[in-house]
Length: 202
Image (tube, rainbow, N blue to C red):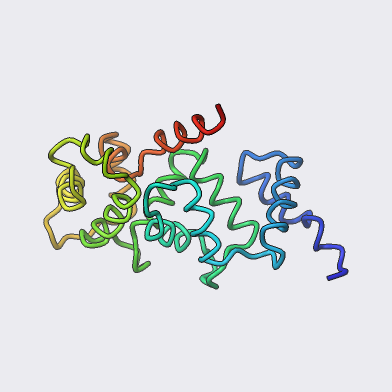
């Protein structure tokens, strides 16, 4: 454990993260220290990631969604997230550029990683999103998107696709750029999360 890297972030990773995220050097070093406290091995397992996620959604079941988020950020498919993958995940989901976010959203929905999205894949992610919306909030959803199936149909119709068609990344990004309504439908409303966090602070 006595090596010098255990307590400090390598310059290479620091430079890369400053280039690819909005975090400052000080912020990254602070994040790194708390990351090492939580994960002394320097890696987050899927289970740890799901448990971190669960803290944000005490009255819902984010496990399935967290699993997909984890998969989309585990760049080298080793079943863990290192600090770099973790920070890029944080950046992308909170303040990434629209195009970056949409590329990430595509990889989230491309469940089998084959480079296209099918309607069943959309349903799988939308179903996991619904598990995070508590029953009370679900009652207030518009009728044509009040179930995962209805919301999936609505998204697929917006893209003008038949049931067995596939969506490429280009079509996915272009479709969302052209229609903000799709963006609303494909994501979990983070506004609700922000409000929850605000309430906790007060």
